[in-house]
Length: 109
Length: 126
Image (spheres, one colour):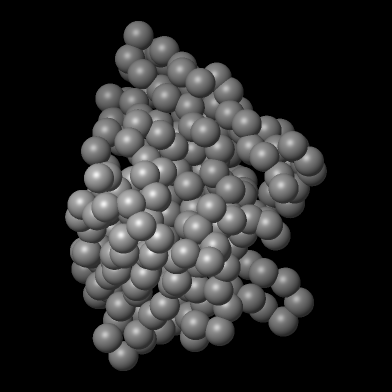
């Protein structure tokens, strides 16, 4: 079973700053199967990225993703007020079919 | 517009059963794989179950295997989750989500879960 670890647990930043979120897999995975989601308080999750580096429909270009093997990164170039939320990475695998990381909370400093 | 609406949540005693529904609209439901994902209070996301567009491929998380059953009725544009032998640790908000993955000839293609419902709350307590 592949385990996803996200760091940091909480990231305290100010609007306009750059956010760098990490997702690490316990073994090498295909970037094809790595997605990122944003969840604002009391809302359903929202797909941000798929295939590690492809923005989903309607996602602004201040969001970018990268990585391969075991290490993946979601970067928000300039934080806007709506970006303060929890971010989850997700992997499609074999068993279980889907795994979510524990999340990184981006809050206002 | 493209929408998923869950229903059927509520308060149930340990050992009891519930059936969740997810009504889809605004897209051709029968073209898409679907998943159920849950979120316990104050916790992260946990994938629960997954069903292919035809219903021929089904997977479950180990935590619910043998207790939960996923199904769909493409004629009614609806997804279901039958939950039996409920336990306190099944307490969560349950989301249905449209899955952009599909099996090609040689491999699985995955583009994320792009549409989510608002969730329905299941509370298991005596």
